[in-house]
Amino acid sequence: MNIEKIIKEQRKYFNEFNTRDINFRINTLKTIQRWIQNNQDKIFDALEKDLNKCDAESYMCEIGMALSDIRYQINHLKKWSKRKVIIPPFSQFPSIAYKYYEPYGVTLVMSTWNYPFLLSVQPTIASIAAGNTVILKPSAYSPNTSSLLKEMFTETCNKDLVTVIEGGRHENEEILNQKYDYIFFTGSSSIGKLVMSKASENLTPVTLELGGKSPCIIDDIDNFKVSVKRCMFGKLLNSGQTCIATDYLFIRDDLKERFIEEARIIIDEFFGENPLNSSQMVKIVNKKHFDRLKNLIKDEKILLGGESDNKTLKIEPTLIDIKSKNSKLLQEEIFGPILPIMTYKNIDEVIEYINEHEKPLACYIFSSNKIIQDKVVQKCSFGGGCINDTIMHVIPHNLPFGGVGSSGIGSYHGKYSFKTFSHEKSILKKSKSFDTSIIYYPYNKLKLKLSKLFLR
Image 1 (cartoon, rainbow, N blue to C red):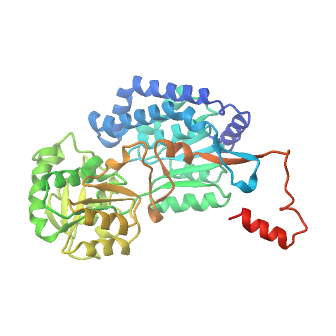
Image 2: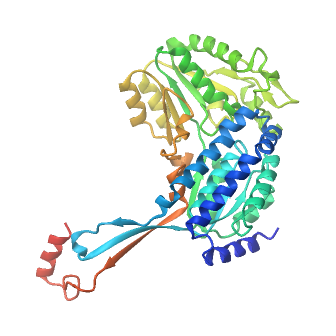
């Protein structure tokens, strides 16, 4: 596949103003929406083959969220895309100012394998909604979903509007050697650095949706079972293969043993007595990551779980007792159903630990104490999070989702997706019926005095 030629043809298509019409964008989104609605069984099948996701989880976490986002874009696109009137300062009298949302042009969307359908569709439809063309590169680790995405966009979009490029490392290298007008990447920090490095060669703007060590803190006993259930859900959804998963737990030291017992009961409720035989348990994406996870826990003190199945690539929900801050489990994002547990006496210990490390993508605090809630939210820097829940801050369309520092650059979801893929163009329209000599040469003390008056 000649990627350079594809980009050239997309740029020509864009420069002919084919994507500027709002109705064209809306109709394209509606076509994609209908395809998803009519082909859910195909999507279920692809996700089951790639990750062993059951239909309910696939709909809740991928198909349903994609459809919800498309509906939101369709319903709000005309309003978002209207020019916005801005009142200029008095120094520019008589004038009026406008703000336009203008598409960038040819965009590259590189998605990942853990939510391979959702994390490909969301940024792609956002880019279309903003008036761009899209080169979509899904992950080679989820080949069935990648193939289905190619089928979907081939059947719903002109190839000069959206082209899906499958493949692995070779294709990624070739893709990144091209010039784009915007790059949206979801994946690991290590690859994110490479993407940003390549983008910098052409001064291409980027959004990087990465990850990190997202902490969960349980500080009190109020509705304790709910706290444990929500914490474990945030860990075990998609077998922990979620960028905003609970990566490690800080729990007040007097609550630790009770947490372990409650977690044991909840895991049984979720997956039965033998989670490895449960159809609800998502598999680890491939042998490489399966072996990496097994290696992470081999020298650790296992409090619960720890068993695995080499044939199905499943790992039991596992709780680990962390005795040393040098544990390998605290050095890298886990991305699996393994929860390291640390205890504390004072919340300031937790805040200090979080702030000594890279800024996480998410942070979760379970507490009924508003002072402690505010302390964590205000003193710790992280992308976003929840108080008394996990994961759910990604649901509202009117909340931006993104990281900070090493956990990402930029944000999206809802209107923030449209803004991410749009350039805000500013225009000042001045009347020629009146002109002031203040701004013109030669300058003198009077003009200095008047400048100070008008530019306050």
